[in-house]
Length: 117
Image: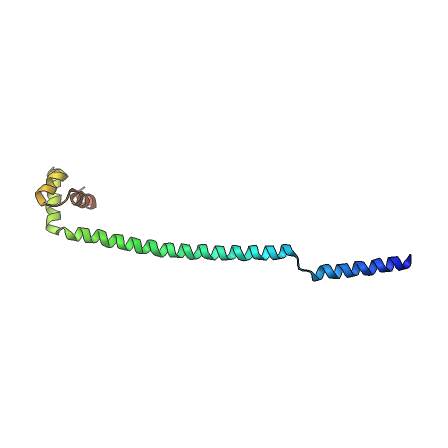
């Protein structure tokens, strides 16, 4: 009986030592998940950074395009358009008289609404 108890005690110590030496598969999964989560967060950060750079570039190009459209129309013509608009002419009539598009006339009027009021 004593031999059986000693043998079981030795087997239990051996099993405990064996369990500590084995790697826990859950820890491996947890580490992989953490690594995946960190890499995903890094990718999201990089993408957000790229998006802000692209948005800034897009805004800059929009401003340049808008300025170039306004520069196409002479300042003198713009003043004439505004004075005709103040006198009550319609945008279509102004466009026909000044040989510009109705969109350009509306753009000039919108851009100068604060001045007109």
